[in-house]
Length: 224
Image 1 (cartoon, helix red, strand yellow):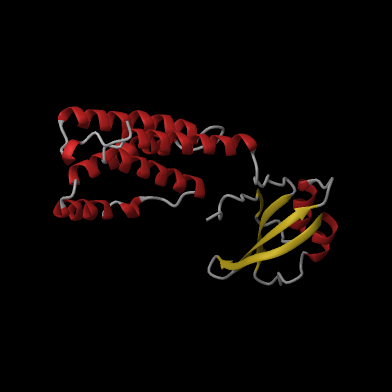
Image 2: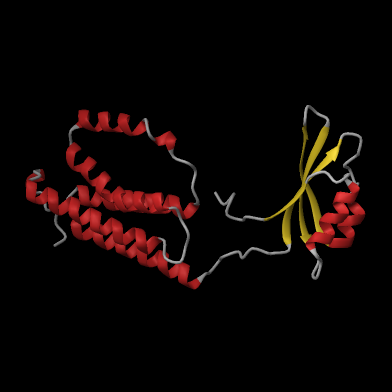
């Protein structure tokens, strides 16, 4: 059961369909297990479902042929830079899919199934337990404020922040509109019971009713 189905390293049509079919079915099961109670794009779900089969066929075709291996590596290098950076979990899922594809491509069907289902079960367990998960604080905001050039942004909002926030930190400053304006970025935590509109209205009075925006802090953005 745990031996390779490729006898003497030779792939027959029957063993090919068994290997690729098992990779496809296991990849579909793995993709649904990995995205249990989580959000992700449909394209990434499809990619994670088909990746084991794609890796399996590459390994099966190469099968010790050095020239074919180099050619395939060159082909993959052309598309590697088309991938957008993902979260730590998505990168882990890609490695799981590739590892299971390697097992299927070598003919070790049982090992590929056990590894894929086992990793999927562990991911489901972590999602169900919700451990080590940093919940977003609705009072923590990223504030972006546009200021006229003649207004010194250093300390101009200190009294407003002291009135409405528990803490306020200046994160970034840049010039816009050919240097005629400043745009400053703060990370703040509002006090309990503070109305966000009143806070923004006081900032608008201070900056001459120029653009002010407030957005929720996304902890997942810089997790890798």
